[in-house]
Image (cartoon, rainbow, N blue to C red; front, side, top):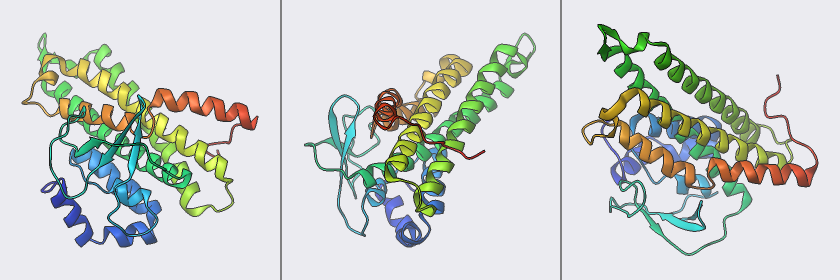
Length: 257
């Protein structure tokens, strides 16, 4: 991922055995690979592999907040008019997306969001240690430290929720399907919320340089907003979770303490 992105990364991942990993150890493969996509800032079309149950070249329609449907194209680096122009996305017609595919996709995108959040936090921490004002690093100022601490707490909480949802989905066959749907929904919502918190705080820590094309922060921010909107934004999913809990008259425990 440090050397490839887009179609080249798709090929590299296939050569490394991505499809076999996804089939045999999805509870390891999905968190590992999608988190690294976020941490490195590259991209691949492997969300299509997660949504499908068999190896195929299918490109699945993806619902996006705002009543839009997008298609993530394979084998192309064509710029898209989307919020993140690096991603090969195009608008498409609505299509069927089974609940099982939606569960898997939300968990995968959640891990991608966590990876992007950690990348932004690392950039902000480095900048806070290197940037000096009044003769001392800005990392020594309480306002900066509190922003970074709040960011870390949000990321850690989202990762814990994602871990529980991933384990339940791939290793615990006793979890009811409706509970798996709700857990994946809440995990994606937590990851999206953590990413938006990270965007806000790290941008404040960076100041003006975070908006410049020369700095990589703005790329991660665009990516985070785009991924949050795919398969339901954190706000939309929170409202959907409330409706589901109301219908079921109970809320599943996300993590057994």
